[in-house]
Image 1: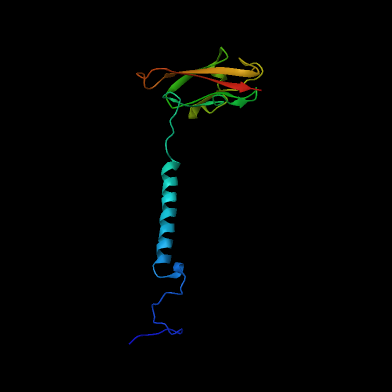
Image 2 (image 1 turned 30 degrees about the horizontal axis):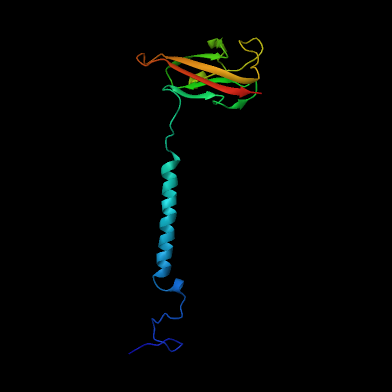
Length: 155
């Protein structure tokens, strides 16, 4: 016995139903959208914590100001080092005494010099300023000394 719907057509006759509402089509579209969204989330998650290639030598985590940055003349200058390194910082040819590397947190490996009155450099000159950090290992004595030179512009 054939069943007929209210319009007199047999049940299952989908001629007048829009293609998006037919059985299977909406499920496939929804599943495809969920798979695409999951792929985007996975791609973001996989690349979010990816390692970037460092241009710094082993032992040096970063310098302040960043290479080629623009900074005020009173900006601190220095380096962040991994534990076990003893630095010497030279700014425009002036060796900064280790007692004046107090603008950072030394326990965290931050050795920064802040120019000021009565210090080795009272104020950085305007224009391009170059600095060098030299660090010797104090724990891994077989490691070579690190030397890194960078320049920045002061205003």
